[in-house]
Length: 337
Image (cartoon, helix red, strand yellow):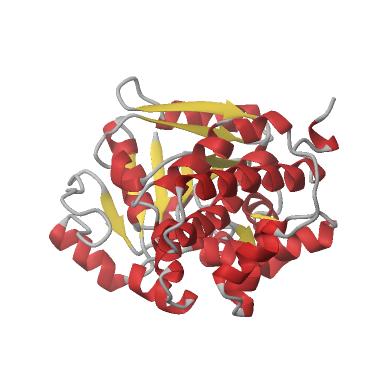
C-alpha cells in the first residue's frame, strides 16, 4: 500500500516508521525545505525523538503532489495547520481516497468543529475521513513499545482499511469504532485536563487532587460529547479514559509538562516556549470553552482552565472556585438509563 504522511513532527515520523515496518511504501512530507534537508542528512530528529533513526526506505519530500497516487493519506500536522493543509490536499487527492487524521483538537477558525468535519468540508465530502486516536506517545511508538489505538469513522470500510494499514501482531493493535464524534472529542479535551493535571503537579498537590481532577474532567468531556451525539461507552475506552491516563500521568506529555511549569509560576506563553513544541491543550481550552458555551453545557473544569490560561486567574484561585461550587450528586442524569 502507498501511504503519504503529511507532517514530520514526532508523531508523523513515528507513524511513518510504523507503516514502513508494516511493509508499506511510505512518503513523509514537510512544508519546510530546511527540515526536509536536515532529515535527509541526519535521518533523525534528536529534539523530538532522540536516538530514533528514520529508515532509509522512507522518502522525505516537500512536494505534496505524491499524495495523488497514495492509497492512504495521513494528516499529522499541528492543529492550527489542519484546515490549510486539507485545503491544499483537496486540489491533489482524488475522490474516495481515505484521509486519516491523527491530530487532536478542535478547529477554532470554523466554529469549533471537529477536525474530521474540517477535512470533510475541505474535500467537499468526497473522501472518507478516519480519526486515529488513543493513548499514544510518539516516543514509545517509534521504539516499538506495545500500543493500542482506535480508528474511528462514519465509514466502516475506511476504518477497516486504516486498521489493516497500521495494525501488526508485534507492537501496534488497532480497534475500529463508528463513534468518531466521541473519539475526537475525547482526544481534544483530554489535553485540557492534562494541562490542569500538570498544574496540580506543579503546585505540589497530591494524588487525591489529581485523581479528582482527571475523573471529574472525564465526566464533563462525556457530558458535552453526549450532547453532540457521542456514545457514552466511548469515554470509557481507549480514546477516552485511556488517552486521559497516558496524557495526565507521563512526562512524555507536552501538555502535562507545560502545566507543571504554569503551576510553578510560569505564564502560559513562557511554559509553551520552554516545552518547545506544540501544546495542544492551550488551543483546545479556548475551543472547548466556547463550544461548551455554544451548546449550553456545564464544564466547570474547562471554564477554570480558560480563566487561568486566557484570563490570568491564579491557579490557586481557580481551585477555590471549583471547590466552592454548590453541592451535587456524583452521577448526573446523563449517565442514567
